[in-house]
Amino acid sequence: MRAPLSRKPFGDYLLVPRAVAGKPVSTVAALVFLAVVLLATALGGREQPQVDALFEEGQRLMDTKNYSEALKKFQAALAISPDGTGSLYNGGLAAYLNGDFKTAAQLCERLAQVDPNDWEAQAKLIQAYQALGDQAARDRHRDRLFAMRRTKVSKELAKQDSCRRDQFEVSGRKVLVFENFELKGDRAVVYTFIVTKQGNPEEDYHFSLGSYDVTNKAAHELGEIDRGDRLFHLDRYSRGGSHATFGFFKNAPSYETVRERVMKIMSEGGQPSSGSEPGSSKTTPLSEPTALPDSKIVTPLSVPRGG
Image 1 (cartoon, rainbow, N blue to C red):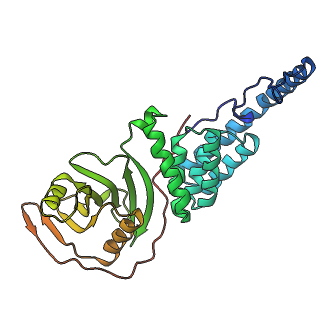
Image 2 (image 1 turned 90 degrees about the vertical axis):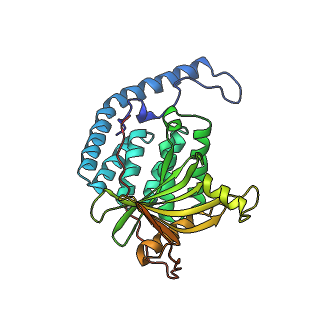
Image 3 (image 1 turned 45 degrees about the vertical axis):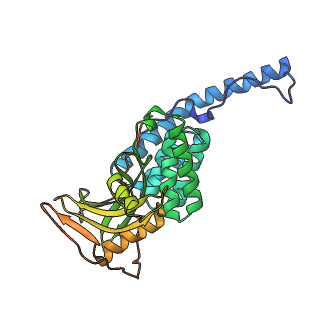
């Protein structure tokens, strides 16, 4: 988890006099400013132990999965230190894990304002706004995260191949969704939907939206797609080695389209258009379920971070 920083009770402000409308401050004004700064520093020294104690209590409550009480501790710390990045991040995470997506978004938005280069704040905002159903805000922060990776604002972010963008539940199965930052390689993948075992965090199988070179080459040669187009396919891969294809898309479909298709397959048992078992292959017709089942947003398997 992020640890609270000693300077945070008063934010990331430069403690030097600033000119007003381009004019230098007077000596008297400078002395007054210095007195205020010294007083603030003295007060901050007394308040910091309280902030640290609240933060540590919040951490302990997070460890026991008591997210509602943890959120209260982080909010109490923020009442003293409004710009505390540790409390903002972990408070946002606690709110998300507690199903309070609106508060999670508010805290992470504040974190993004305090530290515009905090890429993890952008990643959490993608998930929070997805849960709130605010696609415009979700996509805005997704674009920001991808831009941050391209411009290499963080060495840690530059090392990441994908980001977690969603989590939901279908028929008692948790589904974790990851999006790759780049469409690259001869077996390029855009989205991966990891389906866990019933009541178990281990992966059971996964779906992926891919665009493989060999598939595109064949489609171009057969005239199924035009020059400049790409063929994408939704596949399911099981741990035992079996594979099934549930449909093809000319150019990349929206995330919503893929998400709904995965949910239909999981809940209604849609038949694949083709598939293979280890050492054999088979082809079956593709069924098209019409009713989309209710879905339930669930908490991500996230870990609080340190500073």
